Length: 266
Image 1 (cartoon, rainbow, N blue to C red):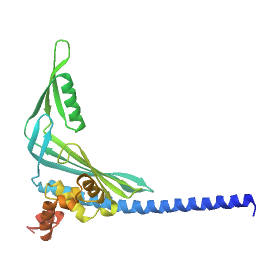
Image 2 (image 1 turned 90 degrees about the vertical axis):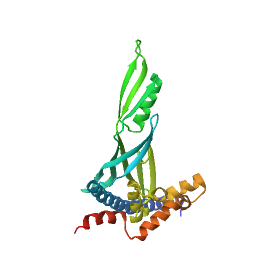
Image 3 (image 1 turned 180 degrees about the vertical axis):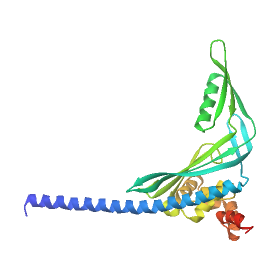
Image 4 (image 1 turned 120 degrees about the vertical axis):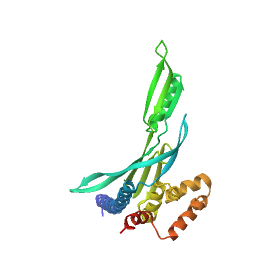
């Protein structure tokens, strides 16, 4: 066998391996896509039913927020729940791309802040923008046109949102929250197979301000907690685990409790 034959054989073997790798990747992507789509659909069904129940039952959920330069705002009522999906169409079929959950925390208190100097006014305005807080600002200027003071009136409503999206390559699902429990953004990442009824139930409890272990669930969150503290997640949240066990012993899931509200009088 000559040199050209050897090179030809080597090239064919390389092509075969590349084709095999491509086919394996496509197969893996297809499997991941099916898995993740199923999990996104499960999350949406849970949230859709939860939102429908909450908008009827209107359970009292009260939050507290710390707003810089103002201080602690207690007694904010959680209300006006909505959930929707962003879809993508493939082969005339709609698939879930993202799930968006929104609600509001509202207070009847007047939220007013005064800032002295133009720099302080701009800094506080930027803080409010970054945290998606609506406001009005009345600026007091000196005869030369420079800002001497800014009187801010903040909206009595804090908008809370969750964006749930997927990484199909890695078969992961990300839940990104804004202004949930505190101002700012938090992210939670899960392997798709970690999404189950128990995790969603803990998510629902967190949304309603009930004792929960939602923030500790998932390998990604457990690894972060261990890296920060050197302790296991369950050791940090033993009190919540006891609460969760007590509730589980009653044999009621979160949605099961809601459903019972509609069946008592039947």
